[in-house]
Length: 89
Image 1 (cartoon, rainbow, N blue to C red):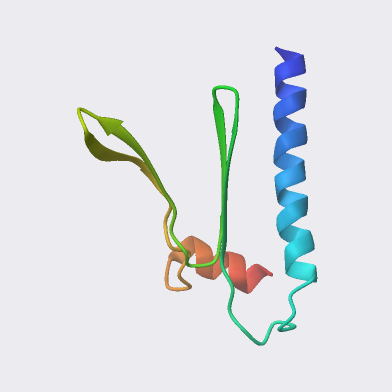
Image 2 (tube, helix red, strand yellow; image 1 turned 45 degrees about the vertical axis):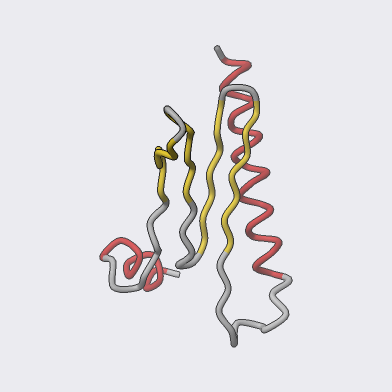
């Protein structure tokens, strides 16, 4: 199990670094808004990352109809934990 945990931590770190790198290369230099969503499937695992107030959905077909099985939240600054994160940053 430690190998699985190591692989998961490596994937998580790579995703975090990708978002940090994208933020550093922001062509608006913080003057504009941007959002990013990433959904990565590796085998039977899904890794989901979201920044900003965009939303992402994962849907599956069940009996010919789409069912949403995951929806990200919009990280709006009026959410208490998002306001706290912004203030602390």
